[in-house]
Length: 253
Ligand SMILES: NC(=O)c1ccc[n+]([C@@H]2O[C@H](COP(=O)([O-])OP(=O)(O)OC[C@H]3O[C@@H](n4cnc5c(N)ncnc54)[C@H](O)[C@@H]3O)[C@@H](O)[C@H]2O)c1
Image 1: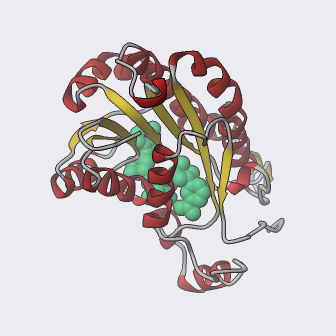
Image 2: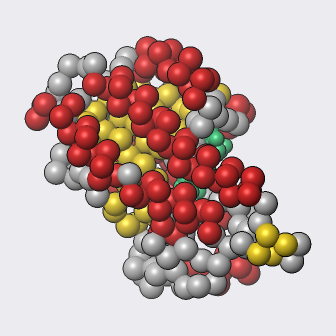
Image 3: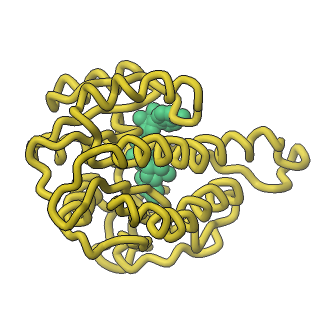
């Protein structure tokens, strides 16, 4: 897909991997909608990159359905959806105070899995009504899983389950949407230098970074954004989960 002048939506675009993706897509000439539940972050990124901000909870079906036509109009018909909105609270299944509250598990699955699917279904519907481009392609959806989908650590039961769901829906979604000319790809990052990780104590950060075989550092958000650009430009990438991990395989703890 040639990106210049086309519309894109980036959820979680107010921070980290999403914000870097907004900047990269805007620099490639796309018209970008930043969707984030944090208003100040969404507006800051939008102002800095020339994008348009929408303050939304991606897992709120009624709210997203209501605003989607305005988002689609703002970017001139979405050709690319990048789902980056996510949360990663850690909690043991059985902790010091007893079993994990079911609501804690539900909240992670709600944002990471339901929110991803919610935006995917709305974007796929909108993309299906657009004119086909080169190769009869109408659009592309990039979801963000995690290496935790495959090597979840202790304390990541909810997060790993939610990301496992994101990874697993890639192939059936790509198969179903192929008839509409829409590709679906997931990226499974390992450790990336975003507010999610940089809020940890520095000693923890250093020891985590040292576990990455090469390069022995956290990934840079721009490296995630660069993969989104490559996926967009390479139509043979479809129905797969791409690890972006510096050869890291997460240990149990
Ligand atoms: N940083 C990493 O090391 C890493 C590794 C693997 C996977 N991931 C995944 O990448 C994605 C981006 O993570 P990040 O590191 O950039 O995190 P981040 O915390 O910097 O950014 C996440 C953004 O999502 C937004 N968000 C959260 N819940 C939302 C909701 N319900 N509706 C709308 N927006 C919402 C937040 O406001 C925030 O701006 C997440 O799905 C995360 O699980 C990150």
